[in-house]
Length: 84
Length: 48
Image 1: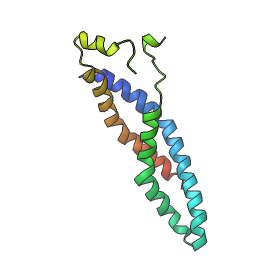
Image 2: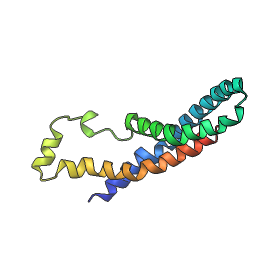
Image 3: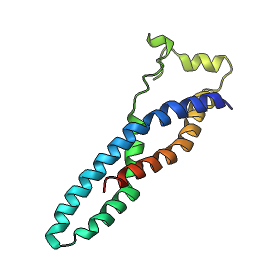
Image 4: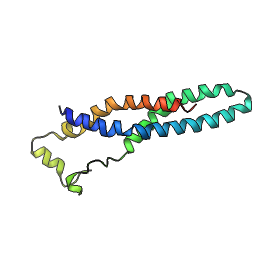
């Protein structure tokens, strides 16, 4: 088993993706919270904006955003020798 | 990205391409994605 390759890929694909994942999820959560609280204020149920964003982020957005960003992020760090 | 028959060369050199290319990525992401999801959850919940 090639553990050095494992850790190299875990660092390049995972550790280096922390900022973009955190920023993207933060702003999507902010937009959903803003729109949801605006819409819920129509019914006077603004308190439930917390539950809306909690359920939305914890059940759906975190894993979706992480998976999409990890799948689509190009690895610019080390191009293969044949591509130079 | 199969370029210049690199995978064929690996196979000729006796290296299993699946064990050398696919398995490390699979194991690395198996460990990394839950941690990244945790970070994403924290970032999303701070937006409330």
